[in-house]
Length: 99
Image (cartoon, rainbow, N blue to C red; front, side, top):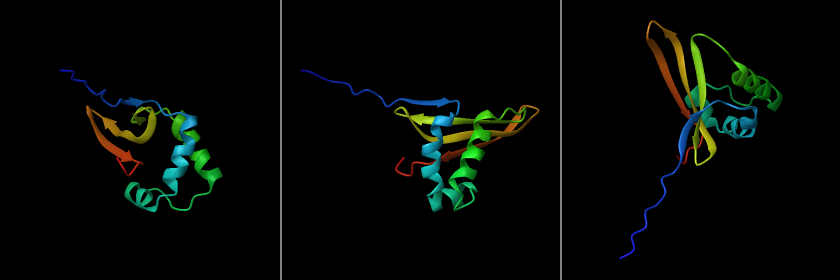
């Protein structure tokens, strides 16, 4: 009897990259995603690119944003915000609605 085991999909939390911009641009065109995550709708591509550059290079003592990768593609992001005295707010945004 031959039993094959499927390979589990790869998932990981990783630093954001400027190369993620095209994915983020697609998310910005999804009104449901924007509404759910407090994103301004109908942003210009230039403004969104400047904002993403800021997200990628942001260094703060009380905020961390990392990408969520599934099967080697960015599908969302996770935030730790308002970090103080061993507490933080956790936020998760999934840009790929099929997931």
